[in-house]
Every structure is written in C-alpha cells, then in structure tokens.
Amino acid sequence: MINLNPGSALDADGAYAIRRGGNTQVVALLGAIGSGKTTLIAGLLQSFLTGPLAGYSFKRSDTLLAFEERCFESRVASGAPSASTVRTSSLSGQHYYHLEVVKNVGEASKRLLLLDMSGEFYEAALSSNEEAAQLQSLSGVDRIVHLLDGRKLGDSSQREKVYSTARQLLRRLYETKVLQPEVPLQMVVSKLDQLAPSSDSEAVSSAIASVEDRFKRERARGSWEVFGIASSPEVNTSFAVRFGVPELFGSWLNDVVKSESPDQRVRVAAGGIASLGPAWAPERYTRE
Image 1 (cartoon, rainbow, N blue to C red):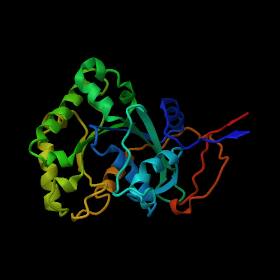
Image 2: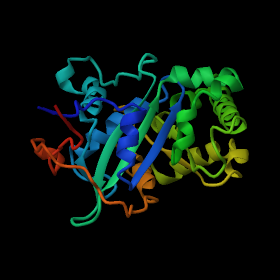
Image 3: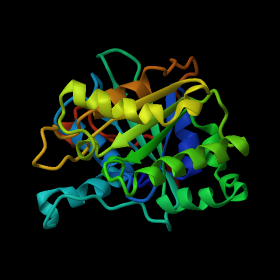
Image 4: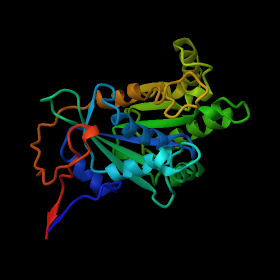
C-alpha cells in the first residue's frame, strides 16, 4: 500500500526532508497576533490560482491542504459575511508550508519553506531571554521576515508599542544567539493600506521611510530591507489585492543556489488542479 502525504502543514522532520533535496530557502515569518502572517501565507496560494507570481509558476506543494485551509475563510464558499483568514493557533505552535516553483521551462525548480509561528510564541519570547532561547527553530532559517501591523502603525495610540515590541524581540533573539547578525532581515509593513494614504509611489515610499528610520540599529547588522504589502486591502482604498506581495515573494527566491545533490525522490502520483499549472503530486511515500 502507498501512503501519500496528506497535504497538511509540516513539522521539523518534514521540513528537513524537503530541505535535503537542496535548492531550498527557509523563511521564518514573525509577528504579533493579528499582524497578517496567515493572510500573507493564504495570499501566496491565491496568487498562483490566477497565474505566475513574481515571474514564478506553481509546480507543486506538499502542504496544499494546509494552504487551502488558510484560504477558505476568504472565499464566497465559506459563507462568511466578510473575507478573513483563520489565524495560527497556539496549539499548533510552529509549522512549515512548502512551495515548489519554477521560472522558466527546463530550469531547475526552487523550493520554499515558510516557518509560521503563532503570535503566542512571539509574545512569550518578549518576556525573557530564556523564552526567546526556546525558539531554536529560527537558528536554521535563511531569512527572517518580521511583520508590523500597518493598521496599528497608523494609530498614534498603538504605534510606539508596535515598534518597541519588534525591537525587543530582535534584541532578545540576537542576545541569545538564536539569530546571527548575518541572517537577512526583512521588516514588512502589512496592511499598508491602513498606513499610506494611497498606493502611489510617493505615499508608499514615505510610509516605508518612516519605518526604516525606527530600526537604524538593526540596519547596521547586515542584510536589511523594508517592504510594504497589502495582502487583503480594504475595498475603499486604491491598493490592489496583494499589493507588494510579488516583490516580497521574489526577494525570497533570488538568493537560492542550485544544489549539486541528485534528487532521489520518486514521483508516484499525478493529478488534477489544472489552474495551478503542472499537477500537484506528493513525492514522498513509504510502502507497507
């Protein structure tokens, strides 16, 4: 009997099996409760339903069901009164989403693992260095993406708390050596439509510059970038759906180096999501 991967989110062992194939980037998504991590994850799959993203076409995923679960609440079929996404539960803790994409026919595919951590983990790490030191899964990532809630940044009563908690978490992760200074860091303003008055380049640049100014110390640590996204903007704004997401997604894949290791996986299934391009086929299996 052949046991196929169920498509659910991966644990650390599952992520390791993917990474052994080479040509893989592990991106950790950090952020307070409600900062937009889950909406960003869901938006990636939604983007591929309409075509390539940042020039990359969807090839396959071992966590397609997990992606779909994140997307469901934003669809008409859910029956929800408004679009939303189910946030990461503290019970699920830390898990990985897998994507495999390709830019041009005949080129080697690139693999991406997104490490999603619940906001409760984030808040616990703020309390002490001992709690921060427990986040050892961050020590093996290729990039840190820290989401800042643009809605709160646009509120003068909440703005300073957003900045201070982000700086505090980064300081604890560096002090406990969970993060090394050379690991690329991206500060991502989510819900940008709630911070910038419009989507024109001048307004967006001004909003991003104000965030950059608040993290001068982190900018000196090495690779550093600030992005702004609006994965699911309000309908009364000039921001397009998933504004800024292609640029952010593309930045995660530009540094992938082609692995020289042979790919030993065996394709055992094919099948049927035509709108996603090449068929999704779980490739890891065991025989009983």
